[in-house]
Length: 158
Image (cartoon, one colour):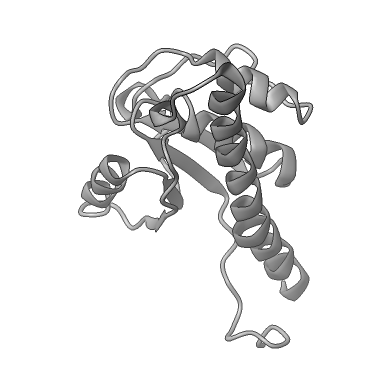
């Protein structure tokens, strides 16, 4: 049965991986935001193409909306304990290429959400922090529109 106004039922992802370059800004931010918005039974993780260092501006930007990275430390795809994901969301070109390589041997849906790297912004502390807020807000909007609504639509039509 078709969803009202839609082109059919979308399968609800049960395991989502967010990937970026170094798993220190965009992907961990997306992981924390998604966990706060999606049902608890959706498995959400993040990883980077290569190892990076934790970025304190991420903590500030997330704290402003009542979220925290907790004990998160950046890690690569190879360091993940679980490797089954039915959806990989890439946030940088290099992560997208790496994710597409994974699809050669596994049936995984890959979405590309080009997201700016806030570390390229220079200026005062507040100007730099504004770039992190932009990334946070964009990721929140994308997760809301493409995952939360997608999940609630799939749940309603199930």
